[in-house]
Image 1 (tube, rainbow, N blue to C red):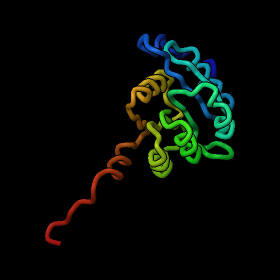
Image 2 (image 1 turned 60 degrees about the vertical axis):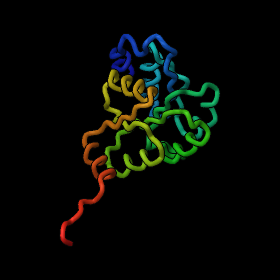
Image 3 (image 1 turned 180 degrees about the vertical axis):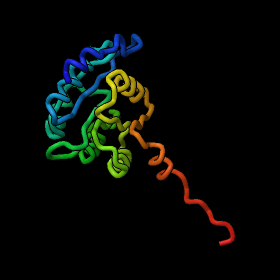
Image 4 (image 1 turned 45 degrees about the vertical axis):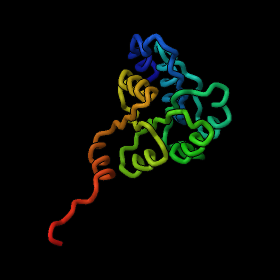
Length: 165
């Protein structure tokens, strides 16, 4: 997987401005290392750290505070969703983007309620992942999963009114 990610590197990620600083919190070593390599190997992006748990990130992330944190939901110990509140409390300006295999409504909704500005699946192509990181750094929210329109529709539209009843 690491070779696939590195081979798929786009040539440019930034617009000549300061690079986008990204931290990765992912317990699977090969996924974490692949993401770190992708970010470090792409112009316009800097990886400030790769952490295998929320506990490790909470201790180490302060060394260089990122603009974006990519985090997995299914972390050992403090889960990604639980850890979002801690990250948000300590680093309110950092954008939190979930990167996970889970597509179920409950986890997506929980992540959004905890303040995630994006929800991406781990099978997101590398170029699209980097585009979404860039959009999150610009303050734009991204929800990328197969049936997100239904979820958004269900959670934002008021109940239909019944006439005459």
